[in-house]
Length: 97
Image 1 (tube, one colour):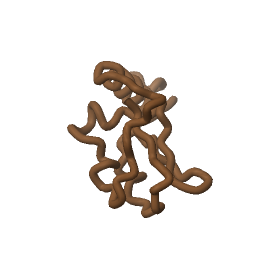
Image 2 (cartoon, rainbow, N blue to C red):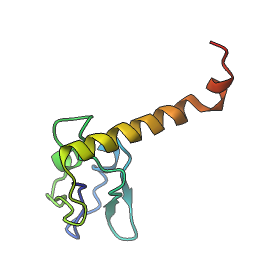
Image 3 (tube, rainbow, N blue to C red):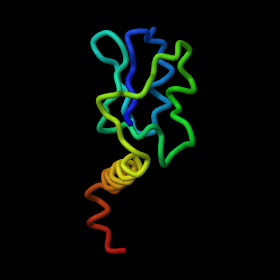
């Protein structure tokens, strides 16, 4: 289940830096969550960090993107593998070690 940010968002800027998957971004009017990147912090934390820090409780489950824990864990694994690949970069491919 990806999360979503409702119109109650006050653009306080506290949720974006807390997201370990960089799924939160500033949209045209309020912050938004990319459901393809949101794992509800599965794999990183026991609770969604954005929900923990939100002062107005405007981050519910997105009913259009309901996923079970195993699907979220698979997404976490895919995202972290991609991040490792990007971090290693082309220089790592040239490394003879």
